[in-house]
Amino acid sequence: IDIIFVKIKNKLMKRIIIPLLFTIVSYSQNDVQNVRVIKDDSQVTELVNILGKNEIKLDVIDLLFQPALSLSYERISDSYSSFGGDVFINFNNNNSSVSWSDRFSISPFYRFYFLNKKDFGGAGFFVELFSKFSFGQETVEYAYGIYNSEPPQPYYEFVDENYFDIGLGVGLGRKWINKKGITFEIMFGIGRYLLDEVGGVDDMPYGVDDVFRDHRPELTIKGGISIGKRF
Image 1 (cartoon, rainbow, N blue to C red):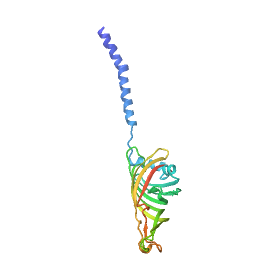
Image 2 (spheres, one colour):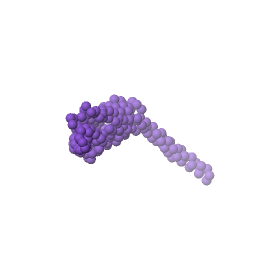
Image 3 (cartoon, rainbow, N blue to C red):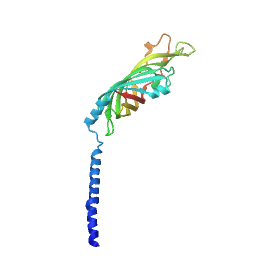
Image 4 (tube, one colour):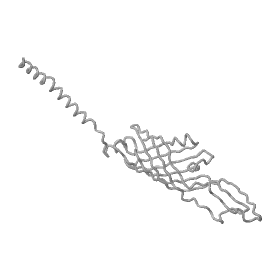
């Protein structure tokens, strides 16, 4: 009986168990070879060329919460950098914040992308350097009758005047892109205007004793949530 049992065991090993183990090992090796997720620079460059190097996007925050339109164009230089510009048009008559006091602005920028293994070229975390050419309105307060009347009888006049200014700033953001070239971006930046100068006595209109320009912004804020298309 023991001899018969040993013969049956050997046959099972040869005909069933050993082939089954061989099949499992072969399948595991093939599975490991197929799972390859690391992208090198050549793969990222190939994806950039397939999706395109041009991108247009719309800021949905300005569109939804302000009667304003903010459009951006971005050109992908390579997998790790890009350049472009933003155009902002404000349809709101109320200067409701420091950022939105601009009536019209053009903002060129340059970006540095920091990719990880799951990112396409021109996507991921980025640092942006930007300049801003702004046209807007400021409320100017003119004071009369302070020095030229005895006793002083001051009165004030508030006038909305147009201005032009140039700003420089830096921002941080994150961009996602799918295989169809649809992009989603979150970005926030802050900068400072360079031409916010108060005129001297010779610049005052005749009869004005003093001028106050406290309503003019010194800082500029850039940012939002954008949806775009790469082509």
